[in-house]
Image 1 (cartoon, rainbow, N blue to C red):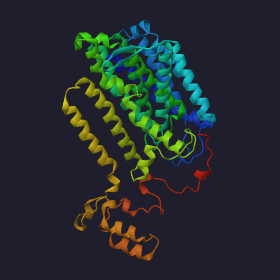
Image 2: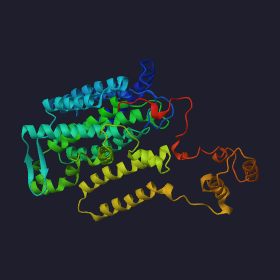
Image 3: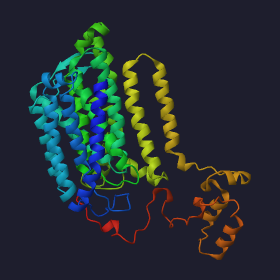
Image 4: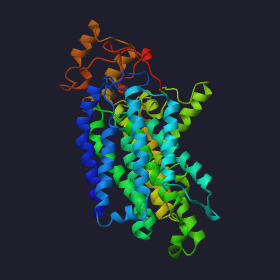
Length: 453
């Protein structure tokens, strides 16, 4: 565990230290596209954050190769080299897209080629655990097609969810943490050496995301761009492929009593990992909904819009930070819930806890629809949005520039704390103040901003 933590810390440190110089390079290189119709940020922000993340990946693999307990992973398996080859290819494609906005079909072809490169070097699905049947061996073509599909789906799921500051990197970090716990349990708890590469990939992925997050939290100073989102999606899928299709359940029969029992015991996590992963179920659901929504409207599945889950959270009244935290909550609930269920699948308390936390998540999700109003005697002790006087003024449509507004404001000055946000002017009509989306006279109109995605 100490060597995994050391690898994680080195990866995070390299990523964090390189992100600042990479931001300056992105500004000089002109990788600061105009604000598009679907964007939420208000200032042009440099991309190419994936450059720092890729070098963090390389540093993590290099350090692990020289550690006593992790170096056998590179000697007994070719999977780390396969990951590095595929990551380098997808990273180059992402860098070109961040700078030149390449076509979506070209990116899709590059993703398939990157997956094919990993398959050629041995990172592929060899068999699948099927409930009631046991382990089913796959032919070479079946394993290749399933591997390529899993890589492409994972890459695009992470890419689609990368729409708010810190959203994609935070969700993938949560997913990788849950995946690390599961793979480490198989490797250390059951002595399955084939789970060691997936454990290493998860630790490195956590470090990549943690090192980049301080620069990417709202308000973000740099975006990871496609060079980063596609990279972390590929690393996440590589770990899933390694542990799902190459760890034989028969190796656990001494612990469970038989091959079929071992397969049943691993089903709670293995089957969700194939669709493609429980730990990225939220971005995967966003991907499916986006494809269905765009196809239903007669548009291309790659056409950009503002209908993603994070956009919907902003529309119903959540702030930028709260929308990101809600997505974090659901990602953690699904990923850690699956891991907990795989450990104690016979315990109903885990199911009850997941159901209860899901109810809490739904309440948080719908919170802006139910904004309570405090009684008049308690208005001085609650935030301004819960005060009846401001609510009534907003409902009456009294502008702040009118004389009546000034009189009302002077009458209620004693109730407003100095520096409170009640002194701020209201947002223009038709604009949700919590979304921080307002008119921008200094920039081009969003509807006219060119975008090839």
